[in-house]
Image 1 (cartoon, one colour):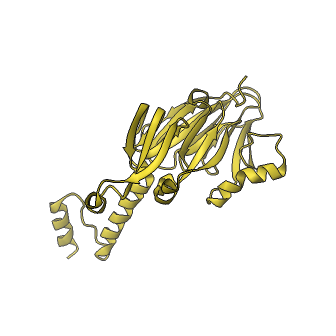
Image 2: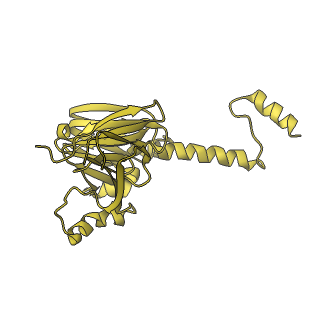
Image 3: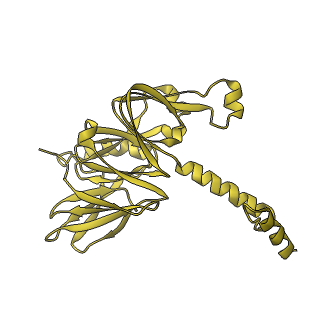
Length: 266
């Protein structure tokens, strides 16, 4: 018998997606604060400390389980959405930035999934959400975005969001090298470490960062094409460039655009 609530769902949209979760009476879904998009009448929500995966756990036990989240700057509270009405009800959760939402059944992932700390969107009640510190010192010091990882445990559906396009790769003892920001999630049977990106020349002039993540083992890995940090860096670069000349618009992508704009602005 499953411990987690069994929820139905549907993902809408293309590049700006949201997931609509269908709840039977008394069923609950948990989510990070601020993820809810809309909910139907009859659904109640309550902010609780922790994920509620261990209802018999005392206050001190719950405090200990959320201590790691607080230490890493994550909120120790999660929002629980419960169908308190009659019949099926729906609640939806939106993606925080352009990308894709995927559902992963933890029962098919050996009951455990490791993911980037910002990729978790929501999950069926009964899913344990905790912080997974990487055991290897190298990964901790040089992992960048990959340093703080979340551990999701349970036997129900979890919903993960990532930037750009998501690709699922199945490893059968192979090893792949990935930019640390492009890792979305991987199964617990996959080992994770950080190693130097080539020789000194490649590290300095290659533009791929000083270190790359290595994933090796047998299991599934999910990668994203556009990490949010990369998108944010590009936006900031363009904003600085645009504002550097006294706020003039430079007509990006067109020499003619720049010339006409410069003439109009004197």
